[in-house]
Image 1 (spheres, one colour):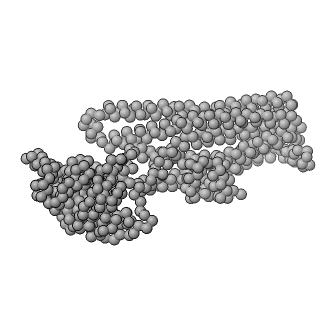
Image 2 (cartoon, one colour; image 1 turned 90 degrees about the horizontal axis):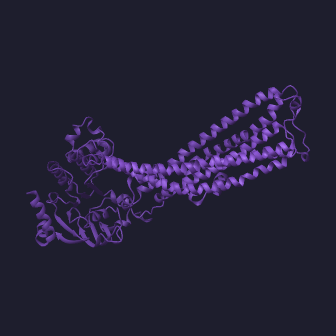
Image 3 (cartoon, one colour; image 1 turned 30 degrees about the vertical axis):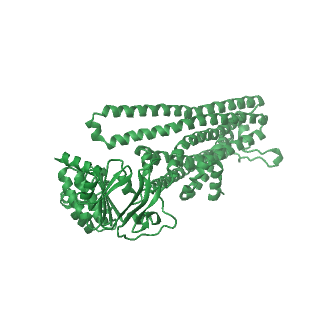
Length: 613
C-alpha cells in the first residue's frame, strides 16, 4: 500500500534539497518508517473518523430517545441509492459498549506502534549521520581544526546532528501522517454536510485554513533567524566550558574563577535571551491557530443552529472539525521545527561539505616498508596567503639524525608536518625513497612514520592499550618489551594494576615524564623507519629529560630522525643541523660547522649555554 520507494518519493517532494541529501541515512530504517506511516494512518482513522462517529451516532443510539435510537447509524447521499445502515432493535447499548473500547484500544495501540517506530528510526538516523560526520572529520587536514574551537565542533557532532532527526523522522512522519488525519476528518465533515439540511453552508467554516497558513509562514521565518543565533551561542557556550575544563590549574593559579564565571554567565544569559524569543514565537503558534480554529467553529455553530441541526449531529461535526484543525496546527509546528532544524543543518553541512584537502589519489599506490630517505624538492607552503616555507630543497639519507633549529615561526614544525603528509605543499614535492608522498596511500606512508611530540596524547584506557596503539596487532609480550626499551617498565610495574592501570583523560593520572615514556614505548613498538621528535623533552624537568633522552637515543639508532627542539640539550647527538630562518634553510651541516659559519645558530647556542650556566 505504501512501499519504501513511494515513501522516499513522498519525502523527496516535501523536503528541500538541503534535507534530501540526508535521505540515504534512512536506508536502515525504511521498515520502521513504513510501519510508522501505516500505524499513523490507522491512528488517524480511529481519531478523525471513529471519535466523531461515536459522538454523533453511536452514543445517541444507545442513550437517546426512541426516535434517536431508531435513527440510522449511517446515511448516504440520495444519488448513491444506498440504503441507510441501522442497528438491530435491542442491540444499541451492546454495540455502544463494544464500540467504545475497541476504538480506543486500536487508537492507543496504533499510537504506540507509530511513536515507537519513529523513535527507534530517529535514533538510527542520528547515529548514522553522527558517524558520517565524525568520519568526515577524520579525513580533514590539520589546518581545519584551527578554524573552530573544540566546543564548536563538539556541538556540531552532538547537538546540531539532532536536526537531521527532526527533519527526516519527526517532521517527515508528520508530513505523511497528518494529511491523512486531515483527510479523514474533512471526509467526515463533508459526508455529514452532504447528508444534513443546511450542511453546505457549514463548509464555509473551513475557510479559516488559509489564515492559518499565513500565520505559520510568518512565525516560521522569525524562528529560523533566531535559531541560527541560538546555534552559534550554544557553540560559544560549549567552547567556554571545554576551555575551562581543560585548564583547571591555570584558572586557579591565576585566580580566574570569577572571570570564567562571568564569561560563562554572559554567554548563558545571551542564550537564555535568544531561547526566550524562540519560545515566544514557537509557543504562540498553537494558540493563534486554535483561535483561528475557534472562529471557524463558531461560524459553524451559528450556521448549524440557524439550519436546525440536531445537537448530536452538530457535536459530531464540531468534533470532526477539531480533528481537522489539529493536523493544521501540527503541520504549523512542523514548519517551526523545520525552521529550527535548518540552522543546525547549516552548521552540520560546514563539516560534511568541508573539502578534503589531503586525500588519496584514485591511482594511489600501496607502499611497503621504506628505507627512510627523505627529500624536499623546491617545497613552498603557507597556511594562508603568506608562505611559511619558501623553496626548501634538502635531502636526508636513511638512518641520519637531523636537528631542525631556528626561532619560532621559522618553519620547523611545518617541515616535519609535510613528511607524513598532514599537509600538501603549494609547490614542489616531498619524496620518501624517491617517491612523491602524494602518489602513495596515506595510511601506508604514515605506517612508516613514528611521532613523539611535546605533549603526547594518551587516551583514557589502560597503559597496555595506549602503548599498543603503535601496533594494534602486537602481543602483550611485545608491548612489555617496548616498555622496557623505553625505560617505562619500572614505573608501570609500580602502578596499582600494572599494565592494566587506566591512565585517565589525556594521561592525567601519570606524571609528565611517565606520559612521555609511554609515548616513546609506543614509538618503539611501531618500529617505523622514520622518527619525528617534536619538542619531545621540552616540557620535562632536567632529571626526567635525561632519562627520556637516553631512551630516545636508543630509539633513534638506525632510523631517519627529524628532531625539532628549542632546548639544545636534545640535539647534541644529532649528526646534522638544519637552521631555519624566515621559511628557508640558511645553514646545513654538522653542529661544529654550523656553529662556526652561522651567526643565528651561534647566538641561539650561546644564549642557551649562558642560561644553563
